[in-house]
Length: 469
Image 1: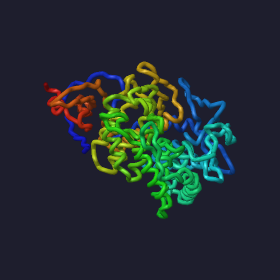
Image 2: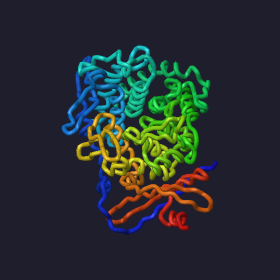
Image 3: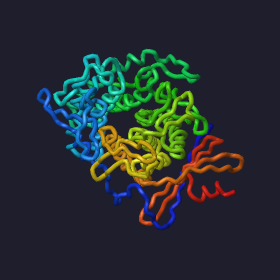
Image 4: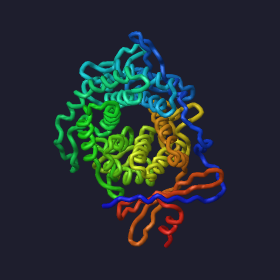
């Protein structure tokens, strides 16, 4: 079935109204604030070099460091994603302090790699004593933290190639050492399996962990761009193929065109398939999710997860920034790749969750301090703690959205309630979003044609034509 999204927009003069959420800043100003992420960092000396830790948790109201007595005080999971934030900040702004912090973080990751190419995750203290036994830290195979390590190191190799070529080469060599563990899980290619009636690959992390593998793919693509030898192309191609297999349904039929996270179902956090596939140039499957599942989310509201056996049994909470970034930045990568502005609009609408366009109506990011709040527990309760993960994911989302004026504009949107209409024998579900700028309001509707499985962006005139009985 052909998929199309029509982009049209209306500008209408009206009085601004008082609403919850964040106001858009003055034109050209940024709300990216690295202060809190900086405060989560701690620099220690290891083997004569400065190494930066990122402390895992920070609890309101004072936001001091909080460790985990079982796992440790810092981990590759958070250090790696922090490194990506600082690397992108350096790449976008030229801020050499961010480059220096990224190098310190990448040294932490290098210290966690084994001779076999895998990575430990946690250190127990700022002495960098590695937790080698906890189930969330062992280095027996490629896994979540290994994939994130490769993401950071591959990004470091690419971004630092001109700034610090010697260290960029060190990062690239670490990615090279990680290839054997990657090839280990790729050995079963191209064997598929049937799980609950769905065909699935066997050659992703843990067989079907498309979510964890997506962040590994981000690193392999970045490393591939940093070199000319082509060593990563085979893995990139096989992983991309496996992810595309794990996509079912359309916006009218569950599971709605989503990239399933693993054989059990879908969850929002870390589901970076569209972002990774777009960066890899494998856009067909990425566009399908962005044309089906992402509009479905924008109209029906954010989800926590659902099981593949029963997608209608949806869990809505908690909601976290780590589920927003893959959607928003994934669509930005498609916008950058395809030039289709519809993806920039929807990227901004997705990111508006951070500025208050969510079920609570409250911002989930504090630009004054740089806090990324830890989650929405239910319709009435926000977790105001600000740990590393939520802060990182909020910053990365906003940093990327701000690079594109169209997306940045719609990051400050407010959404109305979803509504339904029947027209000419077809069923539609839609939601209207509005942005106010100095008393001028722009409106756009995301409309799901449930009969033809097509999502459309409409202006008020076209929406009125649709809803006129």
